[in-house]
Length: 221
Image (cartoon, rainbow, N blue to C red; front, side, top):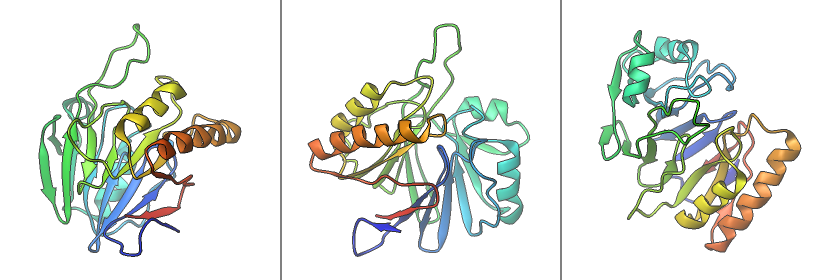
């Protein structure tokens, strides 16, 4: 476990690719449980799931069903595109500018659209989420939460829609105190290592600390 402070208010555990598990006050929030993430089994005390957009590497029906079966009272927050794609599930639609309270978590949503992959492909809905004013994850975008201090940021590092210069510029603009990479399963081990090095440099420019988290590792915030 990697610790950023001696007092743990919230713990984030990175899973493969874009999935994060956040724990606070005995409750759990799951973000983007998708197809590149190992099956999430045995999760308890889950009060909510956030899905940033409709692509399968960020949610699957199988992942949602596994979590819901053990946590039937949870709430799913997602943009309208997810609600249209996941009709078998009860989705609370959220947009940029919305704020939601669930258990010990305050969720603030930012942005509107997925980054452009190619002009031949549709641009789907996407929201970034700021959790407890501490951890920001932009989904598949580089939406900057304007006017908001972002202590910790999860940074996409590898995808058909990004180049590393955009990830670096995102970190330079946000100036977080802590950063770690997500969205890495399309990269080789060498590519992930290179991305970590670039993001560490960018984080250090603002006086922050970079954590090269591997799946299963946690950061106390």
